Amino acid sequence: MASSKHGLSQGLLRAGYLLPSSASERTLANARVRFSADGILSIQEDADTSGANPERTLIMSPLANAHDHGRGLRTLDYGALDTAVEAWVPATYALPPVDPYLVAASAFARMVRSGIGSTVHCHLSNDIQSLLREARAVRRAADDVGIRVAFVVPLRDGTRQGYSAATSALAGLRPADADAIRAQLLKPSAPVTEQLALVEQIARECEGPLFQVQYGPVGLEWCSDALIEGIANASRASGRRVHMHFLESRYQREWADAAFARSPVGHLHSLGLLGERLTLAHGTWLRRDECEMLAASARSCPSTRVPTCACVRALRPCRTCTVPA
Ligand SMILES: [Zn+2]
Image (cartoon, rainbow, N blue to C red; front, top):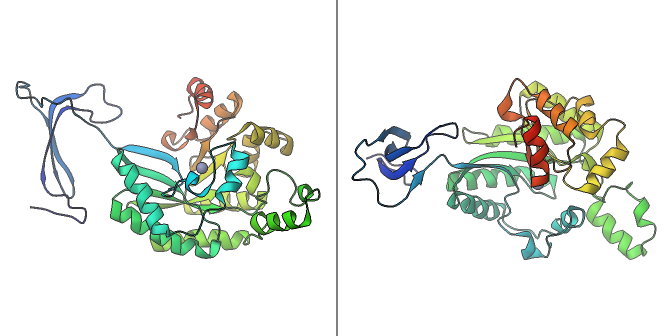
Protein backbone atom coordinates (compact mmCIF):
# COMPACT_ATOMS: atom_id res chain seq x y z
CA MET A 1 0.00 0.00 0.00
CA ALA A 2 1.35 3.42 -0.94
CA SER A 3 1.92 6.05 1.70
CA SER A 4 3.17 9.61 1.85
CA LYS A 5 4.34 12.25 4.27
CA HIS A 6 0.74 13.27 4.87
CA GLY A 7 -0.44 9.76 5.57
CA LEU A 8 -2.33 9.34 2.31
CA SER A 9 -2.58 5.76 1.16
CA GLN A 10 -4.19 3.99 -1.72
CA GLY A 11 -7.86 3.70 -1.16
CA LEU A 12 -11.42 4.35 -2.23
CA LEU A 13 -13.71 7.30 -1.59
CA ARG A 14 -17.45 7.06 -2.15
CA ALA A 15 -19.94 9.88 -2.31
CA GLY A 16 -23.54 10.39 -3.23
CA TYR A 17 -22.45 13.00 -5.79
CA LEU A 18 -19.23 14.13 -7.47
CA LEU A 19 -18.60 17.36 -9.38
CA PRO A 20 -15.69 16.52 -11.72
CA SER A 21 -14.69 20.16 -12.31
CA SER A 22 -16.06 23.68 -12.10
CA ALA A 23 -16.84 23.46 -15.82
CA SER A 24 -18.81 20.25 -15.52
CA GLU A 25 -22.40 20.44 -16.61
CA ARG A 26 -23.55 17.58 -14.44
CA THR A 27 -22.61 15.77 -11.31
CA LEU A 28 -21.90 12.06 -11.14
CA ALA A 29 -24.14 10.05 -8.89
CA ASN A 30 -22.93 7.38 -6.52
CA ALA A 31 -19.33 8.15 -7.39
CA ARG A 32 -16.30 6.07 -6.57
CA VAL A 33 -12.84 7.67 -6.52
CA ARG A 34 -9.78 5.46 -6.32
CA PHE A 35 -6.64 7.26 -5.23
CA SER A 36 -3.03 6.70 -4.25
CA ALA A 37 -0.35 8.89 -2.74
CA ASP A 38 0.37 10.20 -6.22
CA GLY A 39 -3.17 11.31 -7.01
CA ILE A 40 -6.48 10.11 -8.40
CA LEU A 41 -6.33 6.74 -10.17
CA SER A 42 -9.90 6.55 -11.43
CA ILE A 43 -13.36 8.05 -11.10
CA GLN A 44 -16.38 5.88 -11.72
CA GLU A 45 -20.10 6.31 -11.55
CA ASP A 46 -22.23 3.39 -10.49
CA ALA A 47 -25.17 2.97 -12.81
CA ASP A 48 -26.90 1.03 -10.10
CA THR A 49 -27.76 3.63 -7.52
CA SER A 50 -29.64 1.26 -5.29
CA GLY A 51 -26.61 1.02 -3.05
CA ALA A 52 -25.92 4.74 -3.19
CA ASN A 53 -24.33 6.37 -0.25
CA PRO A 54 -27.25 7.13 2.03
CA GLU A 55 -25.58 10.32 3.15
CA ARG A 56 -25.94 13.31 0.85
CA THR A 57 -22.21 13.69 0.35
CA LEU A 58 -20.47 15.62 -2.42
CA ILE A 59 -16.88 15.38 -3.69
CA MET A 60 -15.56 18.41 -5.58
CA SER A 61 -12.25 20.10 -6.37
CA PRO A 62 -10.76 21.99 -3.41
CA LEU A 63 -11.44 25.71 -3.24
CA ALA A 64 -8.79 28.33 -4.03
CA ASN A 65 -8.21 31.27 -1.72
CA ALA A 66 -7.30 34.15 -4.06
CA HIS A 67 -6.05 36.57 -1.40
CA ASP A 68 -5.02 35.94 2.18
CA HIS A 69 -2.36 37.12 4.61
CA GLY A 70 -1.98 33.88 6.52
CA ARG A 71 -3.04 35.45 9.77
CA GLY A 72 -2.65 32.51 12.11
CA LEU A 73 -2.87 35.14 14.84
CA ARG A 74 -6.02 37.11 14.21
CA THR A 75 -5.72 40.88 14.18
CA LEU A 76 -8.24 41.28 16.99
CA ASP A 77 -5.92 39.23 19.20
CA TYR A 78 -3.38 42.06 19.23
CA GLY A 79 -5.75 45.00 19.30
CA ALA A 80 -6.30 45.77 15.62
CA LEU A 81 -10.05 46.27 15.52
CA ASP A 82 -11.94 45.65 12.31
CA THR A 83 -12.49 49.15 10.97
CA ALA A 84 -11.76 51.34 7.94
CA VAL A 85 -8.66 50.15 6.09
CA GLU A 86 -6.90 53.48 6.71
CA ALA A 87 -7.03 52.90 10.47
CA TRP A 88 -6.83 49.13 10.37
CA VAL A 89 -3.64 48.75 8.32
CA PRO A 90 -1.45 50.87 10.66
CA ALA A 91 -2.90 48.95 13.60
CA THR A 92 -1.68 45.70 12.05
CA TYR A 93 1.89 47.02 12.16
CA ALA A 94 1.70 46.32 15.89
CA LEU A 95 1.84 42.58 15.15
CA PRO A 96 4.01 41.20 17.97
CA PRO A 97 7.03 39.04 17.12
CA VAL A 98 5.59 35.55 16.64
CA ASP A 99 6.98 32.37 15.15
CA PRO A 100 6.33 32.67 11.38
CA TYR A 101 6.06 28.89 11.06
CA LEU A 102 3.35 28.61 13.71
CA VAL A 103 1.41 31.58 12.33
CA ALA A 104 1.45 30.23 8.78
CA ALA A 105 0.83 26.63 9.78
CA SER A 106 -2.24 27.48 11.84
CA ALA A 107 -3.64 29.68 9.05
CA PHE A 108 -3.02 27.02 6.40
CA ALA A 109 -4.48 24.28 8.60
CA ARG A 110 -7.68 26.30 9.07
CA MET A 111 -7.93 26.75 5.31
CA VAL A 112 -7.45 23.07 4.56
CA ARG A 113 -10.06 22.12 7.15
CA SER A 114 -12.53 24.38 5.38
CA GLY A 115 -11.87 22.84 1.96
CA ILE A 116 -9.22 25.16 0.54
CA GLY A 117 -6.42 23.46 -1.39
CA SER A 118 -4.45 26.47 -2.62
CA THR A 119 -3.91 30.02 -1.47
CA VAL A 120 -2.33 33.31 -2.47
CA HIS A 121 -0.36 34.13 0.66
CA CYS A 122 0.37 37.88 0.85
CA HIS A 123 3.10 37.68 3.42
CA LEU A 124 3.12 40.20 6.27
CA SER A 125 6.52 41.41 7.39
CA ASN A 126 7.88 44.53 9.01
CA ASP A 127 11.52 43.78 8.37
CA ILE A 128 13.14 42.99 5.04
CA GLN A 129 16.07 41.47 6.91
CA SER A 130 13.89 38.64 8.17
CA LEU A 131 11.93 38.01 4.97
CA LEU A 132 14.06 35.14 3.69
CA ARG A 133 13.93 33.35 7.03
CA GLU A 134 10.17 33.89 7.19
CA ALA A 135 9.68 32.61 3.64
CA ARG A 136 11.53 29.40 4.53
CA ALA A 137 9.24 28.99 7.56
CA VAL A 138 6.10 29.54 5.44
CA ARG A 139 7.35 27.00 2.89
CA ARG A 140 7.88 24.47 5.67
CA ALA A 141 4.40 25.18 7.03
CA ALA A 142 2.87 24.72 3.57
CA ASP A 143 4.67 21.42 3.15
CA ASP A 144 3.61 20.15 6.56
CA VAL A 145 -0.04 21.13 6.11
CA GLY A 146 -0.16 20.06 2.47
CA ILE A 147 -1.44 23.19 0.72
CA ARG A 148 -0.42 24.79 -2.57
CA VAL A 149 0.89 28.34 -1.98
CA ALA A 150 1.62 31.41 -4.08
CA PHE A 151 3.98 33.31 -1.76
CA VAL A 152 3.69 37.06 -2.39
CA VAL A 153 6.78 38.97 -1.25
CA PRO A 154 5.73 42.38 0.16
CA LEU A 155 7.46 45.24 -1.68
CA ARG A 156 7.11 48.89 -0.67
CA ASP A 157 9.26 52.00 -0.64
CA GLY A 158 6.75 54.72 0.12
CA THR A 159 5.46 56.17 3.35
CA ARG A 160 3.23 54.11 5.60
CA GLN A 161 1.69 57.30 6.89
CA GLY A 162 -1.63 57.47 5.12
CA TYR A 163 -1.87 59.27 1.81
CA SER A 164 -0.14 62.51 2.73
CA ALA A 165 3.43 63.60 2.13
CA ALA A 166 5.66 61.89 4.64
CA THR A 167 6.04 64.67 7.18
CA SER A 168 3.32 67.26 6.63
CA ALA A 169 0.71 65.61 8.82
CA LEU A 170 3.09 65.39 11.76
CA ALA A 171 3.52 69.15 12.16
CA GLY A 172 0.41 69.56 14.27
CA LEU A 173 1.25 66.79 16.73
CA ARG A 174 3.09 66.92 20.02
CA PRO A 175 6.80 66.20 19.42
CA ALA A 176 6.70 62.96 21.39
CA ASP A 177 3.74 61.68 19.37
CA ALA A 178 5.37 62.74 16.10
CA ASP A 179 8.57 60.91 17.07
CA ALA A 180 6.63 57.74 17.90
CA ILE A 181 4.89 57.83 14.52
CA ARG A 182 8.16 58.47 12.69
CA ALA A 183 9.70 55.44 14.41
CA GLN A 184 6.78 53.20 13.52
CA LEU A 185 5.68 54.43 10.09
CA LEU A 186 8.57 56.28 8.47
CA LYS A 187 11.32 53.70 8.52
CA PRO A 188 13.64 53.94 5.50
CA SER A 189 13.02 51.35 2.79
CA ALA A 190 15.58 49.15 1.09
CA PRO A 191 16.57 50.19 -2.46
CA VAL A 192 14.43 48.83 -5.31
CA THR A 193 17.24 46.65 -6.67
CA GLU A 194 17.80 45.09 -3.26
CA GLN A 195 14.10 44.29 -2.85
CA LEU A 196 13.84 42.73 -6.30
CA ALA A 197 16.99 40.68 -5.72
CA LEU A 198 15.48 39.38 -2.50
CA VAL A 199 12.43 38.11 -4.40
CA GLU A 200 14.70 36.08 -6.65
CA GLN A 201 16.68 34.76 -3.70
CA ILE A 202 13.49 33.64 -1.97
CA ALA A 203 12.38 31.97 -5.21
CA ARG A 204 15.71 30.15 -5.60
CA GLU A 205 15.56 28.79 -2.07
CA CYS A 206 11.88 28.14 -1.60
CA GLU A 207 10.11 27.45 -4.88
CA GLY A 208 8.86 23.99 -5.69
CA PRO A 209 5.98 22.30 -7.48
CA LEU A 210 3.51 23.46 -4.82
CA PHE A 211 5.16 26.72 -3.76
CA GLN A 212 5.45 29.64 -6.16
CA VAL A 213 6.90 33.10 -5.45
CA GLN A 214 5.31 36.33 -6.73
CA TYR A 215 6.13 40.03 -6.60
CA GLY A 216 3.90 41.87 -4.14
CA PRO A 217 3.81 45.65 -4.60
CA VAL A 218 1.74 46.40 -1.52
CA GLY A 219 -0.38 49.11 -3.13
CA LEU A 220 -0.18 52.26 -5.22
CA GLU A 221 0.05 54.53 -2.21
CA TRP A 222 2.95 52.58 -0.74
CA CYS A 223 5.06 52.15 -3.87
CA SER A 224 7.05 54.63 -5.95
CA ASP A 225 6.82 54.66 -9.72
CA ALA A 226 10.41 53.40 -9.78
CA LEU A 227 9.49 50.36 -7.72
CA ILE A 228 6.42 49.51 -9.81
CA GLU A 229 8.37 49.98 -13.03
CA GLY A 230 11.17 47.81 -11.67
CA ILE A 231 8.68 45.08 -10.79
CA ALA A 232 7.10 45.30 -14.26
CA ASN A 233 10.50 44.91 -15.92
CA ALA A 234 11.56 42.07 -13.64
CA SER A 235 8.26 40.27 -14.16
CA ARG A 236 8.59 40.61 -17.91
CA ALA A 237 12.09 39.14 -17.78
CA SER A 238 11.39 36.29 -15.37
CA GLY A 239 7.74 35.49 -16.11
CA ARG A 240 7.07 35.76 -12.40
CA ARG A 241 3.57 36.91 -11.47
CA VAL A 242 2.58 40.06 -9.59
CA HIS A 243 -0.13 40.42 -6.96
CA MET A 244 -1.16 43.86 -5.69
CA HIS A 245 -3.75 45.52 -3.46
CA PHE A 246 -5.83 48.00 -5.40
CA LEU A 247 -8.61 50.52 -4.70
CA GLU A 248 -9.90 48.90 -1.54
CA SER A 249 -11.54 51.99 -0.03
CA ARG A 250 -13.31 55.16 -1.12
CA TYR A 251 -10.42 57.22 0.24
CA GLN A 252 -7.91 55.27 -1.83
CA ARG A 253 -10.09 55.96 -4.87
CA GLU A 254 -10.20 59.70 -4.12
CA TRP A 255 -6.48 59.85 -3.41
CA ALA A 256 -5.60 57.94 -6.58
CA ASP A 257 -7.85 60.15 -8.73
CA ALA A 258 -6.08 63.22 -7.35
CA ALA A 259 -2.59 61.73 -7.54
CA PHE A 260 -2.58 60.41 -11.11
CA ALA A 261 -3.34 62.37 -14.23
CA ARG A 262 -4.57 59.19 -15.86
CA SER A 263 -6.77 56.80 -13.91
CA PRO A 264 -4.94 54.55 -11.44
CA VAL A 265 -5.37 51.66 -13.88
CA GLY A 266 -3.99 53.87 -16.65
CA HIS A 267 -1.09 54.66 -14.36
CA LEU A 268 -0.27 50.98 -13.94
CA HIS A 269 -0.49 50.64 -17.70
CA SER A 270 1.94 53.52 -18.25
CA LEU A 271 4.41 51.83 -15.89
CA GLY A 272 4.15 48.56 -17.82
CA LEU A 273 2.48 46.53 -15.09
CA LEU A 274 -0.82 45.62 -16.75
CA GLY A 275 -0.85 42.23 -18.38
CA GLU A 276 -1.52 38.58 -17.96
CA ARG A 277 0.86 38.16 -15.02
CA LEU A 278 -0.88 40.76 -12.83
CA THR A 279 -3.67 40.06 -10.37
CA LEU A 280 -5.27 42.81 -8.30
CA ALA A 281 -6.79 42.21 -4.88
CA HIS A 282 -10.02 43.92 -3.83
CA GLY A 283 -10.69 46.36 -6.71
CA THR A 284 -13.70 47.47 -4.71
CA TRP A 285 -13.74 50.96 -6.23
CA LEU A 286 -12.88 50.11 -9.84
CA ARG A 287 -14.94 51.92 -12.45
CA ARG A 288 -16.53 50.16 -15.39
CA ASP A 289 -14.02 51.58 -17.89
CA GLU A 290 -11.17 50.37 -15.66
CA CYS A 291 -12.67 46.87 -15.44
CA GLU A 292 -12.85 46.79 -19.22
CA MET A 293 -9.25 47.95 -19.50
CA LEU A 294 -8.13 45.22 -17.11
CA ALA A 295 -10.11 42.61 -19.02
CA ALA A 296 -8.58 43.70 -22.31
CA SER A 297 -5.04 43.75 -20.99
CA ALA A 298 -4.87 40.00 -20.51
CA ARG A 299 -6.91 38.58 -23.32
CA SER A 300 -4.25 36.00 -24.04
CA CYS A 301 -4.51 34.39 -20.62
CA PRO A 302 -7.99 34.63 -19.17
CA SER A 303 -7.25 32.61 -16.10
CA THR A 304 -4.78 35.14 -14.73
CA ARG A 305 -6.47 38.46 -15.35
CA VAL A 306 -8.46 38.28 -12.18
CA PRO A 307 -8.90 41.36 -10.05
CA THR A 308 -10.14 39.70 -6.92
CA CYS A 309 -13.12 41.66 -5.77
CA ALA A 310 -13.82 41.87 -2.10
CA CYS A 311 -17.43 42.92 -2.04
CA VAL A 312 -20.69 42.96 -3.87
CA ARG A 313 -20.13 46.51 -5.04
CA ALA A 314 -17.15 45.36 -7.08
CA LEU A 315 -18.74 42.18 -8.36
CA ARG A 316 -21.44 44.09 -10.21
CA PRO A 317 -19.20 45.92 -12.70
CA CYS A 318 -16.99 42.87 -13.12
CA ARG A 319 -19.88 40.62 -14.04
CA THR A 320 -21.13 43.03 -16.62
CA CYS A 321 -17.80 43.64 -18.34
CA THR A 322 -16.37 40.09 -18.34
CA VAL A 323 -13.50 40.57 -15.88
CA PRO A 324 -13.59 37.35 -13.86
CA ALA A 325 -14.04 37.92 -10.15
ZN1 LIG B 1 -4.64 42.08 1.62
